[in-house]
Length: 440
Image 1: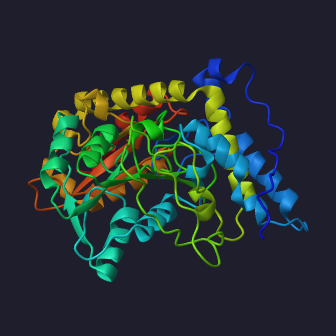
Image 2 (image 1 turned 180 degrees about the vertical axis):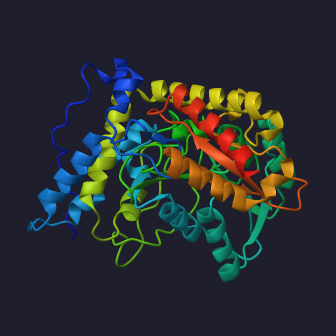
């Protein structure tokens, strides 16, 4: 019999700025991050920045284990870390896995679902490669049909437009729906609950790429009604690189998701029985009879230092207040979009702005005077390079398709986070406008 999971205590916390974090100013909170005063980090959609206490936790725990004779395998189930982080997102330890990143989590879900010839997966062309490439793999291997919708990209987009688009595309062959919680290209905060309700009405499995969700939005995953959701630990949650979260629904809750639990094979697992089958997963009972999280979590040795650091990052977010963080960065997102509309015109925006339900901290826009410049990727590459190397402003350019356009569009993407402020956004937009005029 294999040993049950041991625990690893978190090291003593590093002192945060004076005062309680939920009352600390955003300027003082910024001091927790190793960011130079002259740097504007507006690219958390790619990678965040670890606070000093998170970095210290990673180094401390890693040193404790390096060269020791301790058994690394039981602690790699991370029972206490998983329980604590799961509570942050309204779910339980048996439903949450600390994985290496959102891409790995998505691969596990796509490969573990029973999807094949005759089945259809409905998704969008604005998904991350981790979604589209894995779906294409199942298409090539098992004959799955993948239908990709093109999301509207406009200043006036409404949540109902997105739900209607998905509903019009569902067919009798549709078995699963894949979509982002927040799209990484246009920064659309998708109507997750409404899309999950739509899927439940048709008996469909929902798989959500929530790479940007942890650390950005205060979220109750059970109340959303999702079946599966993957998230990054190193983007808006500001944990270490090589950390992610995988949520697998393990409850049938009539309030939020009354559908039977979808079958998921743990394709990477050293906990799956060597012979026979695991116990059946719970159906009407709210108490799990099968810890699907353990089967997915157990995958050989893992970095206890990274898991501890991710748990510390989540702890810091709770001390600051997840609702407080969400309110602050969504306000920065709204401010960014209205400033873009004022400086460059509403037509420059690809991110929805008028429907507050769709606003996120990510804003995508075309800063060049001519609309057709959006087709010229070289100009965007030069612009982003100059922002970084001449002005220490970190942003990203993105590329995506737009309804009615025969060519892919490029955009500058700004991501506001808790270590940013309006002054940084103003400076970034001022410099972007000047450089765009020079490059045009």
